[in-house]
Length: 378
Ligand SMILES: C[S@@+](CC[C@H](N)C(=O)[O-])C[C@H]1O[C@@H](n2cnc3c(N)ncnc32)[C@H](O)[C@@H]1O
Image (cartoon, rainbow, N blue to C red):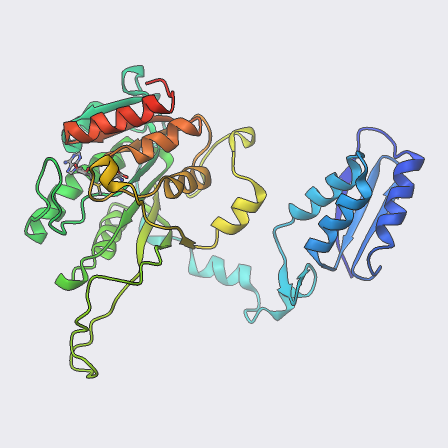
């Protein structure tokens, strides 16, 4: 038994191409992988495939002919497979599943029950040109009020964590209820301006020493607002020299203190889990997609915070990943806590439209300088 895929060509296969397929087939066991030429199409039969080997033989045999490259792309495009040793298993991986009648059981359970009667309008609007490709200095709770409902495709942000950092403007040491009140005033505006199908992606670190699970409290707020939880990414920073060296109660279960080398990224959707967009405007490669849908990202922290005079930046590569995985080229991206402008820079560099808001004039200037240095028009 094989998994079958059909690849149709513009013209009938030439003799040379049929010869190529023959040589290609000889490189693999017929029971694992086989290609059958048929007029102007090829049938690709998959059972178990060693991908690096497949790629290597395509490289060796192609000699400028695109047929084998297209076959390889078609195989790479198959999403459903398991891993058996070094090979992709396209046929038997499902048999190992423990849950029988999975689809019926999914239907019985229902998905995101907490967001079912959200009541969000599906009518999206265009953002006025005066907010496009702009850095605005101000309190986001006020600035965002000027934007119309349903006009933003993606919000990616990292709010102040209330850790007591010395930002150029605004406090970072509120009592916790006051902190969440201020934060949610901004997030409620974010929800309002998000399009139906838009996403809000929040990078956050709880303050373990105060026993405040900020990532859960924020997620609960979004769930109460009937957004759909799309997932959580662990941003592994690999910073093993964490601050706390006193481990609560040394060698005693009395009060051990847990340490973390990662931060959290919470992803929520408004109205619909699926985001509309043209396939041609997706700019993520197959390799990137495969690596980044695994929800643990190992990325080093930003090392140039002194240079930009900002105490809590995230790295450009983190912003680039979020933008490519969750938005299309041309989308309108907003960061309401834009700081030194990492999100707006990544957005400008990747062909997204952007708006960055920060309460500090100094950070807004830095964000603008970074855009200018990258020759991005704003
Ligand atoms: C964690 S930093 C964001 C850093 C940013 N991701 C970067 O890479 O540069 C949070 C930012 O929120 C800003 N901020 C705090 N309160 C704000 C508010 N009410 N409106 C707009 N910005 C605010 C701070 O000035 C700070 O730059």
